[in-house]
Amino acid sequence: MADQPDTQKTFSRRFSVAPMMDWTDRHCRFFLRLLSQHALLYTEMVTTGALLHGDARRFLHHDEAEHPLALQLGGSNPGELAACARMAEQAGYDEVNLNVGCPSDRVQNNMIGACLMGHPQLVADCVKAMRDAVSIPVTVKHRIGINGRDSYQHLCEFVETVHQAGCHSFTVHARIAILEGLSPKENREIPPLRYDVVRQLKSQFPQLEIILNGGIKTLEECQHHLLTFDGVMLGREAYHNPYLLAEVDQRLFGNAHAVPSRVQTLEKLRPYLEAHIAQGGAMHHVTRHVLGLAQGFPGARRFRQLLSVDAHKAEKPLDVFDLALNQLQGH
Image 1 (cartoon, rainbow, N blue to C red):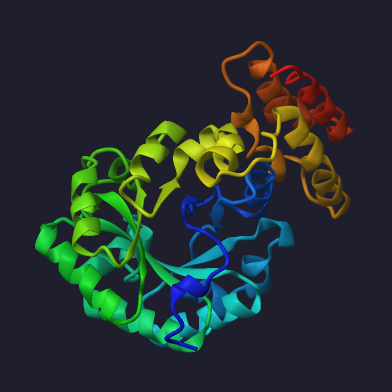
Image 2 (cartoon, helix red, strand yellow; image 1 turned 135 degrees about the vertical axis):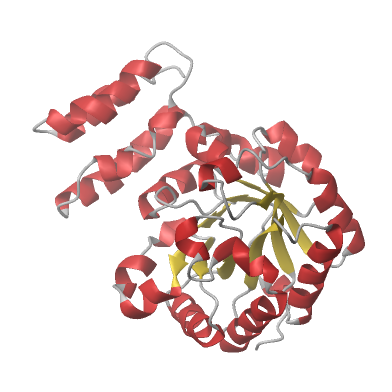
């Protein structure tokens, strides 16, 4: 079980949407799945403490339509991570991913995220514990380094150590993380992108699956990077410009199905929205994720205004949704 190679998986990491705090919740993922059948989707990071001592059912809840779907975990205790990986597998997730890339203060203090790059053996112990506990793939998302430990030699040592523990798939954000003095937002923008470093890593470890992350904005860039890497992961661009995903299946996976229009996508979202409202949920829980669908054409601004402002005041929010949908006709 534990030494089952990741090639047993029935999904592809050729294109994925990054785990993003406060953004890639279950409503966002349901919406993104309407645009692409093949993209691998990730949850927001969930800490081991939240799963083991909080409302695990709420954190793990997802719709069957979201698959292929990976749970990202934050933590550094091998036993706790193994227990959480088992919960992920039992809940039906296709993959469990360990966060070794998040630079935010709230995770550093608890030995979660990018600071773990300074402790390769601990990460390896965590990966081994999770792999021993589950049969689904265990993967790692990390940076190319952290301040004070940012040489290429350090990166290779990290990857080799974690690979020895049985990890075959590494998603690499092509920036270092500066753990003191920069906010999480600044850590996504200020450290320079170093695709060349990740390219060197792939050539040194050709047997490993290396997924490139960081700064990728177009499908043309994706196609270019896929000549070198096994996969690409998009974060903010996929969230702010989600219609980019509509052509992913055709252009990156060779799927012949027709590209869904914006209107068709939202028409498919409507029953989900109705069910959410019927269960006592607010419409904006879902529609906040679709605002980026309309940009740069007549009616786009009105679409965003209807869903982000007018819907809050409406007695019948679904009527406002239908009005907003009409703004997208022909686009």
